[in-house]
Image: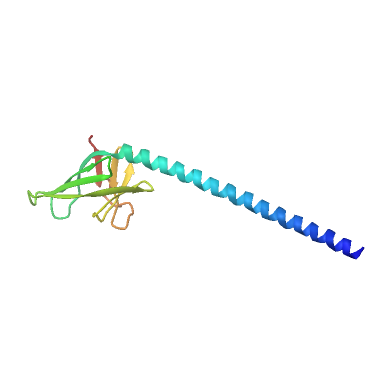
Length: 148
């Protein structure tokens, strides 16, 4: 009789352990599927944002020792860019940078350029060197408007 009770208890514990393992597997499977779906949605959103972002942006950014920094930024569909800028009232030289661009959490990064831009509807807002919004009286002047 004791032997029969031990087998019954062992079977009961085996059943409990099996149920716990199956439940854990089901829970982790659901969690992983949710992450995959969210990842795919973010990927689709970034692709559509990238496609919509391609174009030409222009503006006159504030300058400490010149009238303005005349800036034109071309973002191409192949994720390459051309940045042209000149220091108005200081020099007639035009400077050109080229490279690739990327987006992370609605922030545009240009390869080879220290500062980044926040994507804001039809314009790009330059961020400071630490990646934060520029504050102060001239803050609204750090924008490149979409012209094409």
